[in-house]
Length: 76
Image: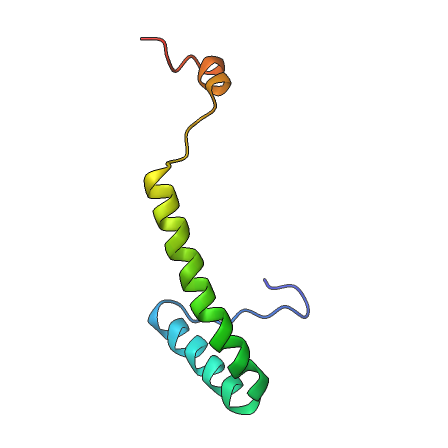
């Protein structure tokens, strides 16, 4: 049971995506400042995502050596 004051919207999957996009479009229509924010933040977010993708592709994250020793991962 939901706590008082907290309500959940019972939408999942594609329906949730449609509702989210509708809220964004309505916000863009009625709050002009958001247009500038999205024009800046979306390309910046895509750039950062691509940069992180290539960074981790060429420099994968490795476990620290001491962690390998603690769990005896080098033992065969």
